[in-house]
Amino acid sequence: MDENSYRVYGYRWVVLLVFALLNGVIQLNWITFAPITVDCIVLYETSAFWIVMLSMSFMLVYIIVSVPASFIIDRYGIRIGVGIGAVLVSVFGYLRGAYAHDFTIVMVSQIFLAVAQPFIMNSITKVGAEWFPLNERATVAGIVALSQFVGIILAMALTKPLAQSFMSEGSTGPLDIAAVSGMLYIYGYISIAAGVLFILFARDCPPTPPSSAEDAERFSVKKGFSHLFAQPDMIRLLFLFFIGLGMFNAISTFIDIILASKGFVAGGNEAGNVGAIMMVAGVLGAIIIPTISDRIMKRKIFLVLCMTGMLPGLAGLTFFSGYVPLLVSSGIFGFFFMAAYPIGFQYAAEVSHPAPESTSQGLIVLSGQVSGAIFITVMALLGNISVEILADARKAADSITMTPFMAGFVALAVVNIVISLFMKESSLVTDKRDG
Image 1 (cartoon, rainbow, N blue to C red):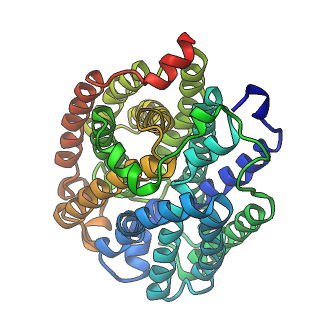
Image 2: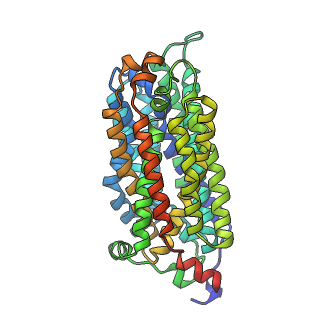
Image 3: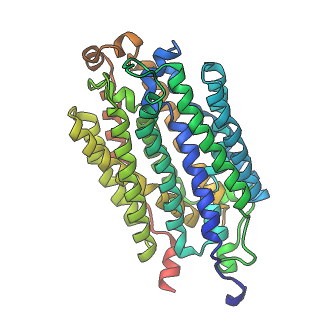
């Protein structure tokens, strides 16, 4: 294709905005119950496993729906593919609040929200490839990752205070059903707004492509899978995210229990604050590092940097018990891990080119969902968690066994550093930079 036949359009930022908003909202819905796990165990009179399952359902469902979602996105485009997710988010985000008193309906709604997730998340690099030139795509992935982190930040920092605002004046006990219902209604209205805005303003692609025909060429999904698994660096990246994203999913889901194991169960919102600091730092990382990566057109060095940088933060979350050291450690871990998230997506799209972006990205997230489900299940079943233990801060600190799991994550983080060192630079960016 002649250079004059492709160009970029200002409307790409509108598409990115509504897409990023929907990504943030699906993450808010995913992690809603993590900072109020203890309250929900008491409120719904069920085990920690079933409350944790509200978050873990996103990982289990992703394993089943990811490949079909990627196929639909590749075959029918962004508007239909992501539009399916937008409709599910709107409907079941609202129903979750309307029937908050019924745990079964809450769980079913959460499962359908989980079905929406791969239709949204597997489209990140697809949106970048359809609307943005190569030298903006890691930045695009960073912006979308930023929106996801903002959704998680809001859930971590605001869920409990927002629910408490619906409680009777002077009430200091665990959250009641009116409090949880009020909070979920607010999140439901936000979900409807995000879904409607996407449907109204999203477009599949611009009139002419943003890059050369060579950059735009894509395999079919089936051929893309075969090509993708023939790339050694893609296999290494899958292992990298199997460990890293699995750890992140487990820590995010268990943040309330991890803090309880350190004695923080009475009163405040320490778990939400630690989780929120992780995400705020992650936003900074997702802005700063992918932007630099795009500017100098290198990927590997930043993946190595991120894998190395998150290790001390993870170690601090494992072995520190003081509130301030936990906040600092959480920030370090969040900054470096979440900076690696968009760079990893874009690196995958480049090293597996011309496989469809939705396929490479879907497999990355799938690997983290599988490991996250494994990690969370083991932690829920073997962590010695019960209502009786959670009711007593001293007993929780002495009895809940989260430290061995976290120490295992530290060891796996070292493995990730080694894996990243064996990865090669993306030839696509090397050719672009040298050319």
